[in-house]
Image (cartoon, rainbow, N blue to C red):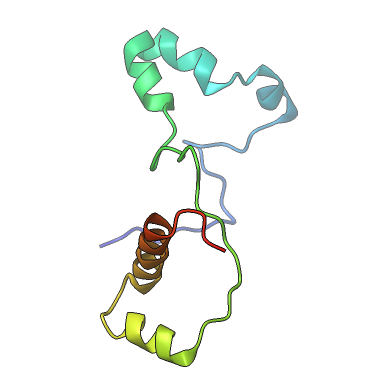
Length: 98
């Protein structure tokens, strides 16, 4: 059974911070190496998620015919990726076409 929280009561284990507490605070990058060591701190402070792509995809608006959209969507999820692949294939076959 979960303990019911009562936000109106003070929390002795986690008291509200004062201006003095904020003034003494230091960034995690400064404190963690002292507590866990440099190697572990480096892993803890590493950004999460996928690394940034050198050339990230751009968000644009494009108008395509209903037939094209229906064709790519009919194969399920990933239809935008398949359109991208089809356009890349076109570029490969027509390298500087006009």
